[in-house]
Length: 559
Ligand code: PEP
Ligand code: MG
Image (cartoon, rainbow, N blue to C red; front, side, top):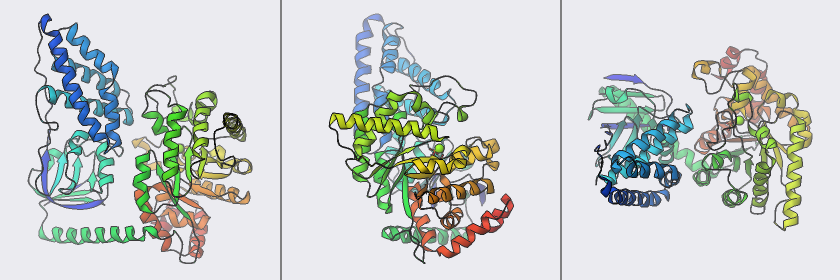
C-alpha cells in the first residue's frame, strides 16, 4: 500500500476503484510541402476540416460555456489567416500550417504568465487538435471509450476529452496539470465527480489498472490499499454521500439559527450557467455577479445590448435579489483586448472602479444595461475597490446620469435601484461610516481585504501561509464594517471566500453579518452550520474571538 498526499481537492468526494491511466499523445502533423498547383485543393481540405470540427463544437456548446469559447477560437480570423498564408505562400500542407499556427498562438497566450490566459492556450490547442484529427481522419477525441467504473488518472484533460466522458463511469479524476479554475476542475465540480488537479508526476506514480482510493476530501491517493484502508474508506465514502444527500434535502430550509436569527445565503456567479447551477441549492439570491467574466470572454468591450441580455436573463432566473458588480478588471483579471500600460504594482494600480471612472462611456454602458435589467427582477448594483466617498459620489453621479438618459429614451428601470459598495480596501474600512451614508448596502470582499490589510499578495504561493483571513486584523476590520453599516441602517453582506469558511461562519454570524454569499456548491454546508447554531452562542463566540490579538489566539478558539 502506498499513500500519496495531494493538494486541496478541486471537487470534494471519495472514489474507490481501478486506476485508468490516460496519456494522450500529441498528434503530430505529417510534415510536408505541397506543389503550387495543389494550393487550392489543400485550402479546400483545411476549410472542410475546420467546418466539420466547428459543427461539432457548436453542438457541444449547448452543454457547456467552455465550448462557446471554442466556437470563437474556430472563428478566429487571425488563426485562419495564418493557416491560409502558410498554405498559399509557404506551400506547407494543411497539417503543418495548422500545427505551426496553433503552437505560435498557444505560446503567445501561455507566455502571459497568467492562469486565465494559460487556460485559453489549452483551449486553442484543443480546438486545433480537433481540426487536426479531422484532417487525419481520426475520431474527435483521443480518449478511448471507458466501459467500466474507473478512477481516471491523466496528465491533462482537454474539454474535447471530458465532453465524451460518461460521468456514470468516471468515479474520480486526478490530473497532473490544471488549477482550480481549469476546465477539468469546473467540469468535475459541475458533475459532482471527486477530483484533485495539478499533481505533477501523478501519471508516473499510479500504475494503470491498480486498485486506488482517491480521497478528494483530505487530498490523498492510496495505491493498492490494504483491507483495513479499503474498509475505512468505504465507510467514509458512505458517510460522505449520506451527508451530501442530507444537505441537499435541507435545501428548502431557511438559513436560520435555532433561536431564530435569519440570514441570507446567496451565490457568487460569473455567468448565466452559474446562475442555473446555483438554483438547486435553494439560494436566497445572487450576492455577487462577477460581471468581468462577460468582459474577459469577449473580444472587445461588450455592448450595452449584450450586457443587458446577460443581466436580464440572470434577473429573470434568480429567485431573490441579483447583485451585479460593475467591471472589476485589472490586476489579476486582465482584459485580453485592453491591457493598458504595464504596471509595476498592478494590485495597487489601475483597476476596477478607477478604470471605470476613467472610461465613463464604458462604465455608463454597463450601468445602463444593469438599470434596464432592473425592470425584469430585483437587481442591485455594486461598485468594487472603492477607497473614498468622492469615488462613490462620482459613481453615483454617473448612475443618476444613466437614469436620466434611460428615462429620456423611454426605457424601463427601477428608479430606486439599491447601489452598494464593496468593502475590500483598508480605506473603505476606515471610512465605512461616510460610505454608509451614501450606499444602500455593503458587501465585504475579504479576498482583497485580507490582501490589503495584511499586505500579502493573494495569488503568491510563496507568501500563502501569511495570507490568513482569520488574522485578528482582518476580523476586526470586518466587525468594524458591520457595525458602521448597521449604525447607518444598511445591511451588510460578505462575498469573499471567508463567508464560506465553516470556522468563520459562526463568528461572522455573531458579529451580525446579514448575508453570506459564496460558490453555490458550498451553500448547503453553510446552511448546516447556521442551522446548527444559536445566535446567542455566536455573539459570545464573536466577542471572544475579537478579544484575541494574535492569530494563534484566534486559531486556539476556532480550530
Ligand atoms: C473579494 O475581493 O473578496 C471579492 C469577492 O472579489 P474578487 O475575488 O472578485 O476580487
Ligand atoms: Mg475583490
